Image (cartoon, rainbow, N blue to C red):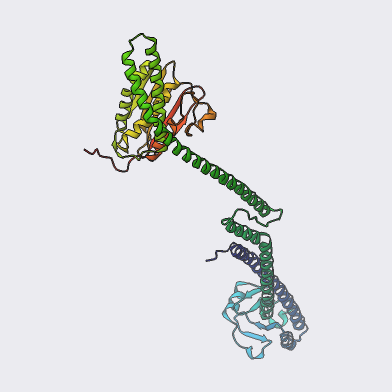
Length: 489
C-alpha cells in the first residue's frame, strides 16, 4: 500500500494522464483509420469507374479481345487484388487472373449482384478488401452483338486490397502510442518535480519540524513560499512561537506556585508551632475567666467586660484550631454517609444562628441520593464553613437554601448551598479559596481553603458562582459510586 503523499499524487496524476491521453489517442487512431479507409473507398470507386469506361469503349469499338488485356493491365497495380467480369448466374467470364475464368464467383458477391448493390464500395474487413460491383448494361449499341434478350451483359467486380492501408494505420497507431507514452512520461516527471519542489518538500519540512518540536518548541519550519503551503508554514511557526511563550509563562507560573507552596508550607509549620504554643495558654485564660465570672454578679460592668474577653478568647481559639487544621490536615476515614442526614444535622446545629440573624432556611433534598464514601466529621466541617460564610453575608437577614440533586443516571451527586447575601465581587471569585484570603476584618481566610481541601480529599469538586449583588452559590460535586455503599455496623 502506498503511504507517501507524493507517490499517491504522482500515481493519481499519472493514471489520469494515461486515461486521458490514451482515450484521446484511441479516438485519434480511429479517426485516422476512418479517413484512410474513406480515401481508399473513393480510390476504389474512381478505379472502378475508369475500368468500366475503358471496357465499354473497347467493347463498342469491337475490340472484345482487349477486355482481357485491360483487366490484366489494370489488375497489376500494387493495391488491386482482382478485376473480373461474371455473368448474372455467377460464372467468371473475364479476370485479371486467367486461372479463375470459368469458375463461380463467391456466394456473397453473387448475392450482392442479385440484390442490386452496384457502384458502392463494400468493406470486407475479414478478407482485407474493398469490393465494387458495376453493372455492364445491354444498351442499344451493345444489342447488335449481344441481342436484346438480357438487360445485363455481365457484372464488373473490382477488389482492392486494404492491406497497405491497414499497415499504415498500424504504423500510425504505434507512432501515436509511443508519442502518447512519451508525453505521459514527460508530464509525469515534470509534475513529480513540481510537486516535490512546491508541495511535498515543504510538507516534509513541516513534518520534520513537528517531530523536532516534540523535543523543543524553539524550532521553526523553513518554508518561505508565498502560496498556501507558505502560509501554512508561517501559521505553524506562529503557533510554535505562541506555544513557546505559553510554556514559558506556565513554567514561570509553576515556579511561582512552587515558591508560594514552599512559603505556605513554611508558614503552616510555623503557624502550627505558634498555634500549639497559644492553645494551652488560651485554655488557661478561658478557665480563669469562667471562674471570675462566677464571682461577678449579673449586671455588673465587670461581667460585661469578662464576657467580651471570653468572646475574643473563643475567636482566637477558633483561629488557632483553623491554623492547626490547615497546617496538619487530617486523613479522612471513609464510611458510607447519607448526605441528606448530614445536611439535616447542619440545620439543627445552626438553627439558633439562623434565628438570631432572621435567616429563613429551605431544604430541597432528593430522596434517591445514594450513600457516599466520606468522612462525616470532615464533611460536616466543610458544610459548616460554607454555612457560616452565608450567615456572615446576611447580617440583616435573608434566605439560605441547601439542595441535593442528580442531573442524570450517570452524573455526579451535587450539593448546592445558596444564600441571598451581598454576593462576592467578581475580582475575588478566583481567589476565594486561597489560604489567608479574606474580606472581613475578623477572619483568618482559612475556612473556604480548608473546605476545598476536604472536598478534594474525597475526589470531589467545589465551585462558586455569584451574580452581581444577588448572593452566592457553592456547588459541591461528588462522583456517583459504581456500586451502592452499605452502612457498616
